[in-house]
Length: 181
Image (cartoon, rainbow, N blue to C red):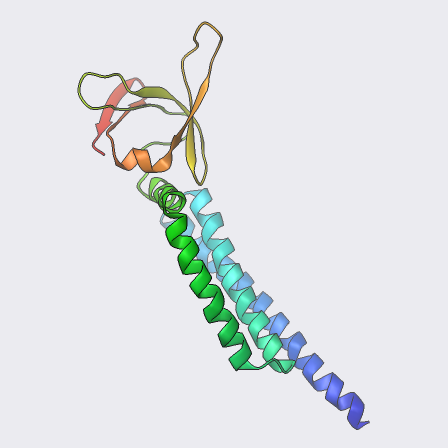
């Protein structure tokens, strides 16, 4: 009987951890959905935040489960600090990519333009800028569909960080708006 208790108690604790984690994920989703609806946050941002919350809760549950199964906290801490060090080095190596990702978040929050609006990324002086209809905004690029040329319509992908380095001209319902970069 003692052998079964040694198996059943940790198994029950693991099951309890998983159930509580799932309930916390559901509660966090409902809470954040209310916040997103109240403050009219873009759906893309809401999805991203929900994913981060679920990831954090899942990692915390995994650590608790590993602890209940006898994995040493010292081993976990050593592994975490090793991965954090490698992550810090990778962070500096991928700075431009991370800059574009951060600028994507800022585009979703500040909304200098929206999908299907016509915008122009202004160059300095008298040079014409990149102009087109916003077709997609992803983590690294904003895709503009340019006017039809001799070979038909073309698309151009602009790194999101450029929208914070230059001015933007956009057209809303027939009138132009200029936003400083």
